[in-house]
Image 1 (cartoon, rainbow, N blue to C red):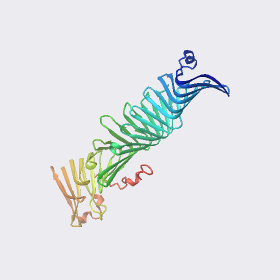
Image 2 (image 1 turned 90 degrees about the vertical axis):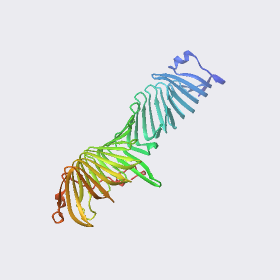
Image 3 (image 1 turned 135 degrees about the horizontal axis):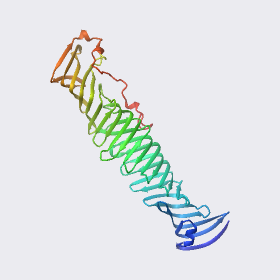
Image 4 (image 1 turned 120 degrees about the horizontal axis):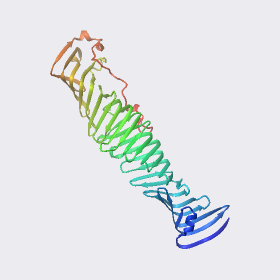
Length: 426
């Protein structure tokens, strides 16, 4: 290897030769403290040391490169950068301790760890590369994106600046500390301008709430795919076979919309909701909470509420059928069911602990009051009709008296059955 000294300066070095700039395809060395050209085999290597600053135009703007030292192959136009490396294009800044810049491609590659800053977003990863012409970046291994309201972990992440789109793949986890919510998935696609995110495969949502000092409650939601819409009405949408569970209720449906800033959950497509020994079904269900506690469940369409009447006589269920049903809760426990429009009730009677037949009644509106999770009183308003069936008539024939559409579903979702992610909650 022979060394050809070109110019050595002890102070700040400026290179402004128009001929050299044209020869090097727009790549320009703006400053360095030392510049040498070395011949290695058939290649000439340009060595730049100390406060190195280089620029190159790209299809999307000027690419600026800073580092402590750099070695550029004048034949391949590949530059090795070392020290405090910084690559800037417009509002995107990438930093590392080492980088390789392919000037013909306008591509920077950082394999010793990378940090990207763009607006309020900060991204870190073990490996990253950036295509300036395409305004595209790709990162892998321990990828973490921190924005103003959330942080996202993944194995691989690709950023498309022009489209305002981000794709994360592999062990995706999004943490939102503002509402104690974490979303998991196999992959994630985020559209920045639309403020829309979709998790297309294997999404799981977990929200941890401190309901009382020393008491933690957790809502778990799973589905086929999940969306997050961050417009004026912020909401999460789960689709497919949606299952959810919390300590005080569980549910299953085809679509669930969670308005987390409004404490409201809307279930559609054959929804079923359970609370203790109570079950409701209908065309749609709206669940409201207050301070993260269950407040009411409103059911519309062909609505039915079912409650187990006795823990020993397992075939006996109090039933309520109507066009609209509202379940009301106090301290997480049901205290009233309100059925309106074409309401029909089936209510089992007891003399102390002894079964004593059943009443079947109908009216414009039926109110069921509960005490200790069991029906305590029934009030029927408007167009009242009723019939009593004595115990000898119904004993061991309870199924014959169930209201039309009755079904008691036993395979309700349980939190221990909804695997969120190994090591977090199972």
